[in-house]
Length: 355
Image (cartoon, rainbow, N blue to C red; front, side, top):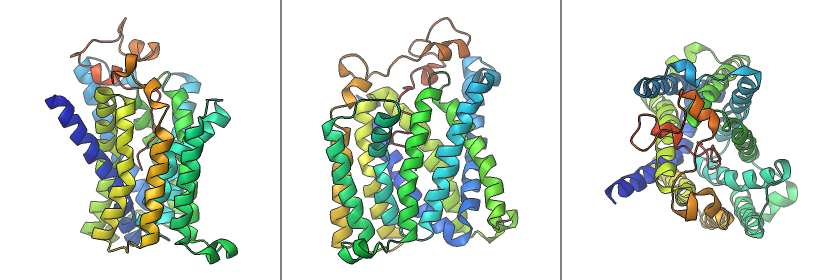
């Protein structure tokens, strides 16, 4: 019971960190070019993720090479994750935030899981339920209220904020990342996939930032608040968020953990109001309620199959490649040094997502 309470608290704090990425991102792009901020975020996160992977491997008695992709298909897989979920997503996310508010960003990007379900149905031929379609339409109605601020004139003239339009592309990039991730997680643990995705994403962001006119000297322009924002994005929003999220999924199951994602836009909006003094009008509140309600409704009716037997919250077993990666003939049992890796669910990478 105590462990479950701790896990629940960690999931709440994780969603708080993810909600905070919108405020941190908004603050950081005030002080440095968006793509340079994105590069710093994932350069730092990559170092920490690889250090964490090495530490986990040492505890498990496995060399770092055990967690390295093997063959062209695996390398192409992790590169595709870096190109979509890190490079493309953060180009749209941080560039969008430089033109619009953190409040709008947190509500628009909340569409992630619903768009993932739709694209999975189109690409992977996964079944999409009526409740998911209804949830998507409800959430899109809420997003429309947010980006138009309730003005029919904006819709008539299509005079949308450029930042809002860029942010609308971010959930599409994340949906692609999630769909590709389902394939990659058939042969790699989530920590390995995330570490290499972060590495390739950072390598793509560096020349993109340079082409955009950024220089490494731009780091000196960041104030203490700017660096705090970058570190929040890299350490709390990416590394700690990843570890605690998968701890929660392993302990409570995907279904129960997924419900917490609905807190992300709530925390994002509240933190934007408290820290950035962004106004909270009636229209945005109403639109936010529709978005959260739509995302929650869209998550109903599909989660039970993603938990363990009888919906008891146990994580699904890891596939064969995970077992061979540790040189083991079977999945290590509870209490083993590699239990944390072996129990990571394969199907859930990024469906809710690290903002």
